[in-house]
Image (cartoon, rainbow, N blue to C red):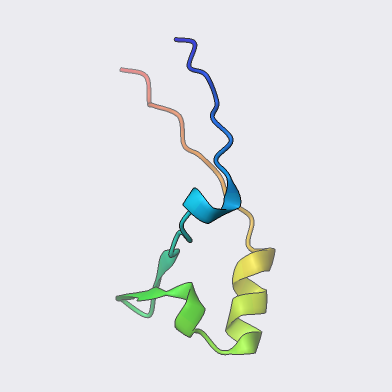
Length: 53
């Protein structure tokens, strides 16, 4: 599956809003206070592989 990666000019790009779950609610990271935004940037992400049957 080869797809060409397009580099759009800055004026054609749009900002992506990142949401995360905090205390049972989904909220945009942009609405976090500065300390919580910093904590979010420091998080380690992982991916889980499919289990074997």
